[in-house]
Length: 367
Figure (cartoon, rainbow, N blue to C red):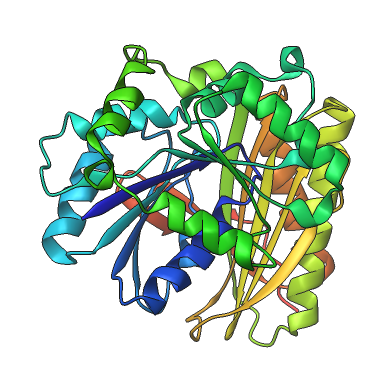
């Protein structure tokens, strides 16, 4: 059983890449399970990836490389017992330390698991060419990687690609570097998938020895505390019966743009990831924005029939007070829903899971 750790800073394209990887493995008869780790209280990526021939587990409210290590071990053991996948893919938070995750798994006494090379995805359009400008946890992720995937090459030119390759090679001279577009697919993505599936058991003895020599002892670090990232997630159940798809798309885009605008006012150079998902009938509206300088991206995915319409928002941004982030997300979401005359209930997380807030204590519009 192989275990893949696919990391990358917020907005590097991990979810899209993993969706394509699941299709790639499925076409080759592989049973796949995914562990999605979200820093916020409510997961979004698990909804996007789940469905078909894949088993998905979400671990939320922290990072599996440090504070949620026990939760990850329990999840791994449960997947092995109940699903017996050929491959387990771990998608950690965008601020995680991948090598710390690998070290934790190696100490769990799970002989059935063979860990593949640590993968880190990079969005070159958001990577400064100056090492001094990189945040510490971004540098750590790059330095931890055994394979570096430069994603979204369809959005840059050859000069920027070369600049990114030189920067990555300076930070990590040992890693294998591959470039591709997960969104467009093609030969580069297939080559990347072929590389990341090779476990240590498949390597020669000399390759394993060289890999071990290159590593320093693991120092336990708390990724959440070290990142300087504020995070918040929330969920709304939409109780209106008939919602046009165009409305779901428009609401998602407006929420993203409004939150981005407010975060830019608070920190003109913020980076991070603001994500929205709107479950709508047999459609799934997915949207995201990753910096002050870009417009929201919206994608419509086909899913199985959703039992109810739900809006989820996850935000993780640098150098913005968390209380201001919470206020912005909540007021923006409720304002957009009320402007569209949609009735809703905010879903709050209790100690035993999620529970709907009583209607009597919510501002609810019914038209």
